[in-house]
Structures are given as structure tokens and as C-alpha cells.
Length: 260
Image (cartoon, rainbow, N blue to C red; front, side, top):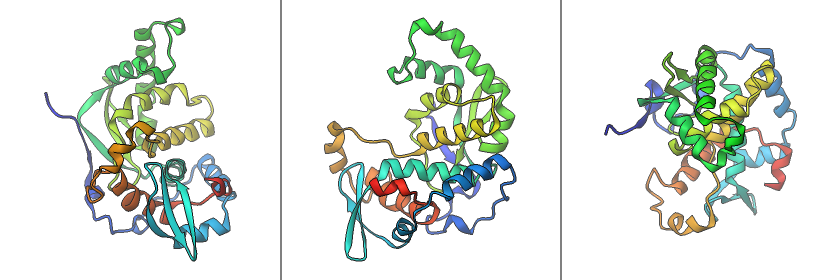
């Protein structure tokens, strides 16, 4: 069986040391996206902004929280919730400017959605309708929306219903492929496709949920503690060397973060 991989395209193999801000992006012209960006920027917290720009990373307290130092104080940060907000903001700011992660081989939406429906997290029950009928309807909808998804979000779906690419929201970071089936389903169930602003916002929210660091259950903490911190695939390495640099340069800290 051919191994499924996700490969960043073109510039995505560049050094992690190169700040993403040096890249040139087309300005966001769509009013609805500019309004959404303005909405979260108005909620920024000056003190937290200064903290995020000047913290010193201390280490992971556990799989979901990390310690940072700012001046003489230590702060405990919820990495999972902050990462979701960071990816949401980046998705809005890089609207229609995404690089792509090419799936090799491409993945049929039929199989992905079948896996999603079989996952208890989907919430589907037979009373809601025949699973295969729902899958067919969902595929038709995503194929119909494919030009928009590719142009605005780097999500490429061919006419046969195969998923070819995902957006590269930030360099050197690939979302967990195990979460891909639910992401595809939630593009249908959690996005309002009738209203432009709600639709685009919903897609950005689902991308953020897909890309963000998911909370690790208590029963997996032992495996986390046994990780090699120098392994680039380890959770702790990604937290320190991928996510926290993103928080420093890409995140507008919100007032609600004071409780995270």
C-alpha cells in the first residue's frame, strides 16, 4: 500500500529561522475578511501584547500548558486554546495567500467522510438520515464549492471528489492527518454557506480547529513525558520551536487570554 504523506510545496521547506513576516502577501481586499480582522484586533490587550513579544520560553508544564517568563514573573499558558486563536487569526490575515500542502496520494472525500461519520465525535445517528446519502450530498456540495475553496484557502478538490491539497497556514507545520476526516465533515456541518461573512469566518474557524494543538488526555501524559525533546516530531519540540515563535510574531493577544 502506498504510504500517504503530506508534503509542503515550494517555499515551505525554507528554514524555520526565516520569519514569515518577510514574505510578501497580496493585500486582503474582501470587506468581510477585513471586518473580521478588525473585530479581533479591537479586542487586543496591550499588556499581553508586550508579554508575548518579549517573553522567555521556560518549558512545558504538561502536554497542554507551557511556562514563560516575562521580567520577574512566570506565566502558565494554555497552548491549545492560544494555538487555535493564532491559527484563526493567521487564516484570516493570509486569506487567498496560502501556500499548499500536497497530499500524496490524493484522498477521496468519500472515504474521509465515511471515517468521519463512523467517529462518535461526529454526533451522527441513523435517525438523521442514511449515512451514504449524506456522504454523497456532502461531496457534491464540496465539489461545487471547490473553486472558492482553492482560490481563497488553498483547499483543492478535483471533479471526482478527491482532496488534493490543504493550506500551509504556517511554514514547517503540518496538521494531524488523523483529524482530517472530521475537518472535512465539519466544513459542511459547522459552516454557514449562505452568508458570505459567516461562511468565510466559519471556514477559518474550522481550519484553526484542525491545525491547532489538540488537548492531550491525562492517560497519554506518560508518553509525552517520555518524548525526546530534540525530536522534531515530538509535541514538546513543536510547542517550543513552532508554536511559540508563531505566538510571538503572528498573534494579536486578546483580553480573554488573561484567563488562559
